[in-house]
Length: 173
Image 1: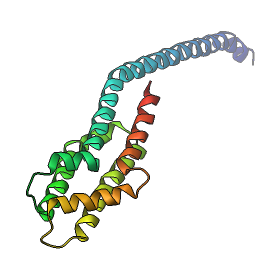
Image 2: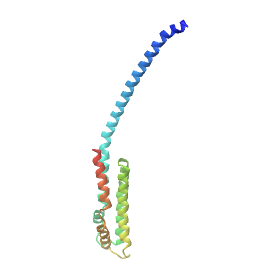
Image 3: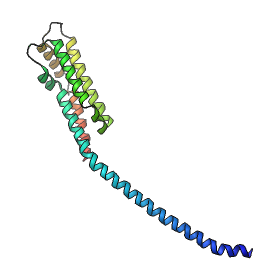
Image 4: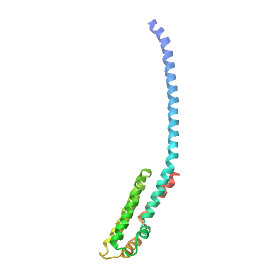
């Protein structure tokens, strides 16, 4: 029994010293890890913030370009038939959307959903307006029906999506 007590006299202080050292070193390494993680996040934020803002800018530009007044003004050419104008309007929307598809990585799902909804609603207005016309209708007839539909709406879907994008872009700051 005395031998065990004698052994414990030497081992117990060593174990206590080892545990104390282990806990101090572990706490130090954990704090160091946290600091490095915070530094990496700050660096990422400095890098990503301008890219995210650029994405919001590009998507607002997309929405401005597919808003019906802007789209009609850019696409309509004298002498176009309603069917040709409808086709060109839809092609322009599709091209603008496809060109900016990768920007969804940098924005929230809510923003992207509002942008897709704005695109789909704009396409729907164009198709509804075209369905109300005869086969031999002119491009101007289509424009008049489009603007007739637009005047009945409180806010254009593109304007709603732009407001959502602006609100989220302000939160980045």
